[in-house]
Image (cartoon, rainbow, N blue to C red; front, side, top):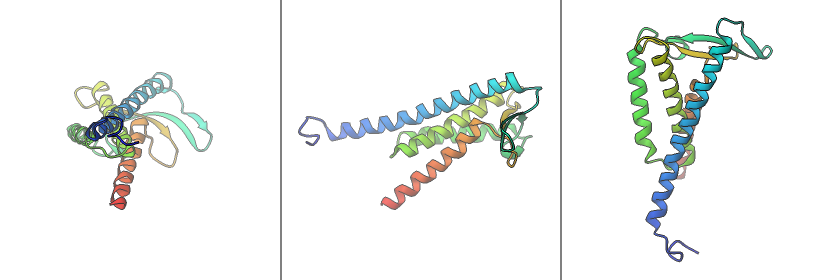
Length: 171
């Protein structure tokens, strides 16, 4: 049975599918944002001014720290750089969300959006203007300490690349 037999316009199905993919972007972004905000609040309330907590001894610990910069503490004295980069990334994600061609791409875009907004919120609420510090707490002890938002951005970027590679190989 095809769409014409059941009285469904093929164009409506395509539009409906695109809206579903667009919804995945914002659903994933909202979940990441909520997880990031809740985890940072819990860590700040329970670990600030306390010793790190070993989750998996020798492998993973929760260590409360804050970071004024970007990845690895870079550019800590340039808060407007982070604002500009976050706004550009968020605008690009919103624009791309309406043309998403796969669920992998949609989820990747959402992870990047939620992570970017989570870290931007830290900068706004934990300092004057945009000079706030981002809360980090996931410590594998062989890598700089990071947070849920950072993880989402990296995983999301990987999914976006994967979706691009998959699309390029199917053409």
